[in-house]
Amino acid sequence: MFSEISDVEARIVDGELRLRLRLVLDELEGFGGSAVLGWQVLDPQTGAYLREGEHHTLALPDAARFETVRELTIAPAQIPAGAVRVVVSILAGTSWRYQCGDRYLRLDLLNQRHGLKVEIVRISALANEWLPALTRAAGMAFSLPLQTVVRNQSLIRTMVWRDLLGRYRGSFAGIFWSVLNPLLLMATYYFVFGVVLQARFGADTTREGFVLYFLAGMLPWLPFSEALGRAPSVLVEHATFIKKLVFPIDTLPVNLVVSGLVTQGFAILLFLGGLLLFRGAIPVAALWLPLLLVPQVLLTLGSCWLLSALGLLFRDLGQLMGFFLTMWFFLTPICYPEESVPAAARPVLALNPFLHLVRAFRSVLLEGHPPDWPNFAVLCLASVLVFLAGYTVFHKLRGSFADLL
Image (cartoon, rainbow, N blue to C red; front, top):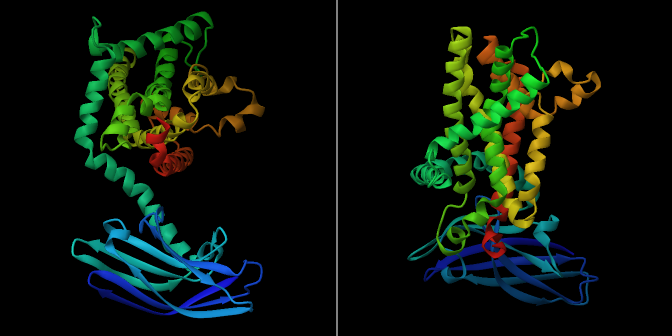
């Protein structure tokens, strides 16, 4: 079956939209003598399905072609308030013909308090909409997450502070455990690799050199692993907010990332103090450090959005993250030099985006020159892709979160 809509007339009468259109159906064989003229309500920005409209059954003749003029009425009560998109098309069996490539009627409406307002009436097809949709989706992929952060920045600050205080409430050291924990972890790794296994980096065979190179690699890893380790369970921990409150749940993974950045900030200050102690100066190239935080935050945030959404679907994911992060840590040359990796494995190792981030941190903090720009470009590209993919999955699944909790 092929459908064609033409000769559309649209009028607003008493706040309702009255449509009159000509409908032509070709190749009617195999559809049981009937089809449905109907409409769907979509989100005009994302194209996401919102609601089903009225269905009007068409009795098809025993012929190859069917033509009719139909009138439809769309009332304000049938669609959500605000801006919406209505798609009028034929439903044959279980398939909407506009999704199969047929032309359809597109209506962009504004449901206001006093009635409907028609903004766009257009005969279109999905083949003509893909480029505007792609451009719009690309812009929204960046703008929606940023709007979420900016709009809820006060809430994020409050929840991060509560998280930091709540994790160590009642302990003697209190919030200082956010610094002591990573210090104890780094001291353990240093003892194993620097003292017991005698690992060294490059030409610097001193223990101080190993400490600096090792800690420079740990600076981005600690906030990354902390956020990813908690991400699969963050929605479960805040189930009450999701089920009983109107709450911006997009911010919950953001809180994990910001909390990790607070810990990283203390660690960077301690590291710079170590540079002054062991080398007597901080290189000027350390001014590139804020730039390196951009791909780190994008990579971490995209991963957290993805893992928090998947953590509701697969509850075992939280248990697997400890193993996965341990494996990722040892596949990244943080506590051992890259030169110790077999030559055959280095091309595979280069696919690890975190390797490029570790290289960049060591470059600006220890080697005194900007990051290697080709490697940094690869890191930025990977981070942007993970950021977009993570938010897209989170946004698509968020409607089912309350049901899964």
